[in-house]
Image: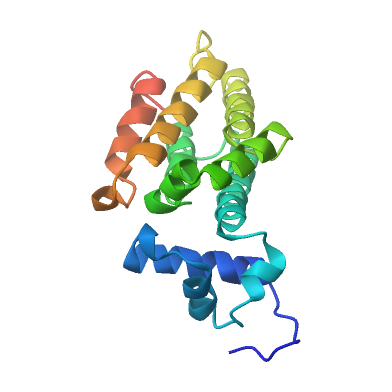
Length: 197
């Protein structure tokens, strides 16, 4: 347990990781501020010192993971011309699917305060699925210019289909399908690329 009054390095991430462990182990109903701080080995009140409550905390956890995934999508630009296009897309899609436990996503959608906080942050410009889609589109446009996907391909529609499908899978999968299925993602990217890539 961290002593009272001592700064905790990377506190947000420590709390977020603790929340993910609580949910993975005990389910969404077990996610309370006390469960999070106990798991993170922090003082009981530390979550409420940094967040307005559990709803804001859940929303910020989801927004943090969306921002990471948006960063992953941006990094596709560094892979233009390298590896298989389908492999690059699948790697991004699997990382996005594994970025959040479905139960955490469920909390963010079903708790009105968390849902409202998330929506307002996204409307204010926090990176989310739109940012991911834009980066995937830019990546596919670059690969098309390089001749690695068909000249007649529609990168914007392909990006929408990929990000939209992953978004659907992320928001609708249940606890029994918590792990992302690489074969489903491989088949999706193959279809988007016309069987190639």
